[in-house]
Length: 245
Image (cartoon, rainbow, N blue to C red; front, side, top):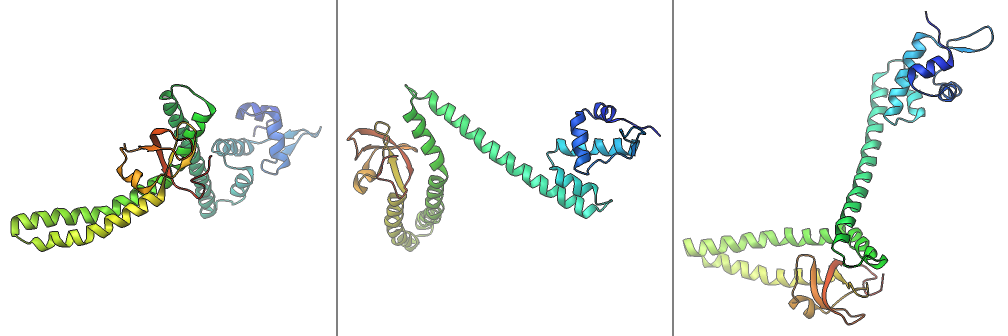
């Protein structure tokens, strides 16, 4: 049976001698033999074990987990559980990295539309990006509460035209008016606007917001802080809505 020195084992596995020695001190890869001079000697089984360790390290498994796996002597349930745990850790890391990448890509796209890049413009973009989840929740709430009302409206019109059942449309009116008032108040309470000139998040009056020209992401308003009148970016309201960022 072949015996390998620390250097030979390291070369065969593509790692450093220091790595092999470290695994020995951790008790993960203990040499099977020692030479007369006290040098570590590794067997073919040790070589196979080392290759398994290197493979698991490539999967980012911690040494403690690898040590537990190698100590199980074929206990498949424990090994499977440890692998599942590491898989979950890697998925969470991938999710976090993906979210950061998406933020970078969004920032790069937004900066392309800026006439002049400044710390303030980057701050505004960062604020709106971090605010998106809360704003999306507001919009989804409005969408899903409004969908039944819209379906009732369509059903009422069709039944009135085709069957003469006017009362279904009347029921829609009875429901739609209170819903419209409530959802408008909810929307007003849940959103604020970011002024691109003074970089303040402010709250306009309900009347101004309701009648203002708007796009899916902006609304033409007068900033309550600097007095600028123009399109401002819609964001989710916070407790500090009327304060400068």
